[in-house]
Length: 238
Image 1 (cartoon, rainbow, N blue to C red):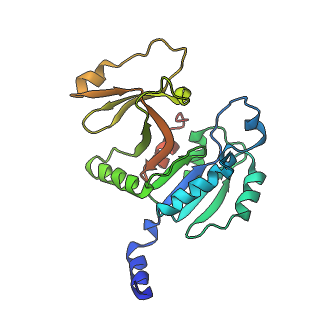
Image 2 (cartoon, rainbow, N blue to C red; image 1 turned 90 degrees about the horizontal axis):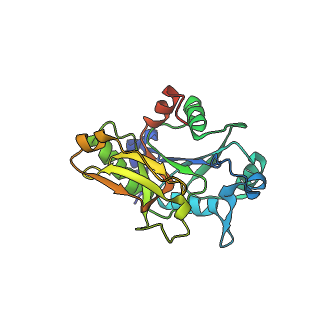
């Protein structure tokens, strides 16, 4: 393809079409595990390769062009690490907020900074995924065309059963409309919890609902531009 054609295509797409990803380096987990106090989870090595490097490879393959790495802890460690990396076809910028204590606070801070210009991919720092995120974003946009209230799509992994899995502690209860997959209820399961209250309206307002405990949350979310303002307008969202 000629350089002229590429230039014309870039002009047609416009700056607003750049696919952006917001990566939260802090999982805002109050775990007392010693590692959480001395080293960022996003740099945890898997086969001697930090999670962040795997994530960046996935983002490059998916056509993401801008990455914002949100840091509230281990700021110097992350800054030094990113400064030594040479990523091609993608830019990565650190967004620093010392003292942020929750996901909601982080998203409100990002909204205030105005760095996200449209639809974006939200990723928790400990995510490990190699899916085509562009395809998943296209699915989210298609859903939003049909339902303007569809602000975000969760990316789930189907394990079938988590009973005998090492991921048992990550098991979640998902209740969704079986037809359109709209999530009605989502809760991480507590091994000590014996009862969960179901709302009658779920059954009255939906022809069929799906109840599943075989999914785990990958910590990857396809977000429309409406997500950040929702957090800014609702300070009880954490």
